[in-house]
Amino acid sequence: MARTIQNSRVLVTGGAGFIGSNLVEALLAQENDVVVLDNFATGKMENLLPFVKNKAFRLLVGDIRDRDACRRATDGVDYVLHQAALGSVPRSIQDPMTSTDVNISGFVNMLWAAKEAGVKRFVYAASSSTYGDSATLPKVEDVIGKPLSPYAITKYVNELYAANFGALYGTEAIGLRYFNVFGRRQDPYGAYAAVIPLFVMKLMKHESPVINGDGSFSRDYTYIANVVQANQLAALADKPGAVNTVYNVAFGERTDLNELFATLRENLAAFDPAIAKIQATYGPERVGDVPHSLACIDKARTLLGYDPQFSTKQGLKAATEWYWQNLR
Image 1 (cartoon, rainbow, N blue to C red):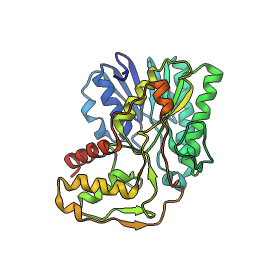
Image 2: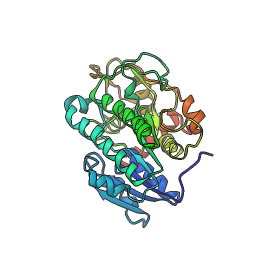
Image 3: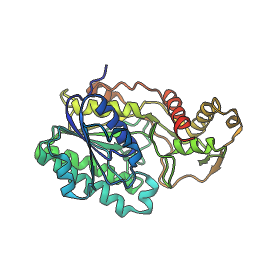
Image 4: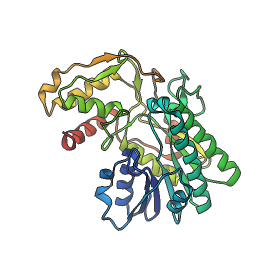
């Protein structure tokens, strides 16, 4: 059984978001005190409503670009799980300035605040976008290419800062390169909605989802429960060489867009048979997209004890059931 954080005080930045709120839920269930710092730029209060009456939960409304807010949030904290960021490659291409300000300046503010507060471990959301134009498959942590978007640049710079803080100040930090995380509470609305909730909502409305390109582009889709496990293992990692480095967090399996669409349609057709007849339409490829992504998770298995419990298909089944029950 994977190690879990218990009887500790944990700060989750971006805790009102999709990944953050799932972390909050797990941590509270494990008898931790949980602090959330969020400015609700992308997170939603509805994601936190199940926790607000819990005496072990505390919400701080604030921005990671505000140094004082970062200091308040890290006061007395054992672990920081830093999820706050402006995600989305297309968003960063349209507005690189704000993505840079939040994802780099905000990240350094949090690192510094954690150092000053004497936090035991700083675990942060890195990204598979860091691999850029590297054609190597599967992706191995120490082989990256040139970034293809401002977002990818910001996430790589995070890794450089974390390593530098470790060298200069002895900070213990671990970066988790997430590969296309999906699951309950992932927002299906807005201009930058991720592909899985976007496809699900279209299908539930009996509308045809748009696949960018010919559907051959593939990703290592990773269910949220695996990400929650990886964050806790990173916070508690104690093997030699396990700290001040980065890890791939994925399932280790590739699914192309055509396969993804077919699986989601099949899952939803179990609730509504009419969905089985819906066909996808095809549009232009997205600017800044890499054709294929597949993670090698050997390093995380060896040094963290990472053992993903949900395959991509199992995760897609769980996710579609959640969307059907909650957003129909």
